[in-house]
Length: 246
Image 1 (cartoon, rainbow, N blue to C red):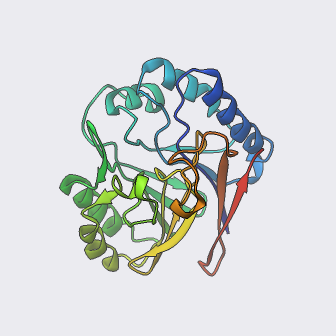
Image 2 (spheres, rainbow, N blue to C red; image 1 turned 90 degrees about the vertical axis):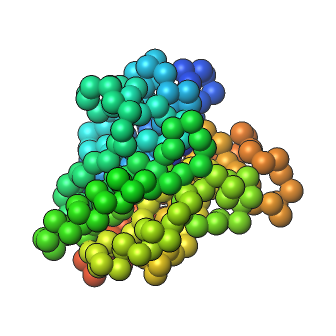
């Protein structure tokens, strides 16, 4: 069994509001981190991609368990690499493989520099296909990115979702070890499927995007920050629990 805490969209800007909300979630996790296998942060960690924002994120994300990060559309690849990965500045896709106890995480860059929309580039899809092909062991694989590849019936976000998803759908059937897709970006807790595979969307920390029939503003800054817990059991059955933290 593996237990994953999933947070997303911190939008840290060094200001008090975003800081308080991120601290609320991360302090909550810090108290249980020794019982977690991994914490996934699925993008938009910084709000403007500034070095000071990544310095703040680095300090907040110090937990006594592995913390996996990937970029979102508000992140800047070069600053993300320097500030969070201890790599040299580079503008190419930030794609990484992380092996944690009991599972493998393929962290894919779905960002398009200068755009809020998402896309898995040809380079990223080739990397993912080759990485999955090379993963010949028995460990389950989570494929993670920022932008959801399906409509979530939230028009504010659906217009900037991950496009070109049919290419991902062609790739996944070749790799039955993929047990779930994990993403963020939507600022809403949601669970659906993609090509028959569970797709779990982590709620936003900085804000929430209400559903259109709720009669609220496009972005709600007052609703409490949230997070998800994903539990994969020994039969590879995934269970997701959501929490909001007032």
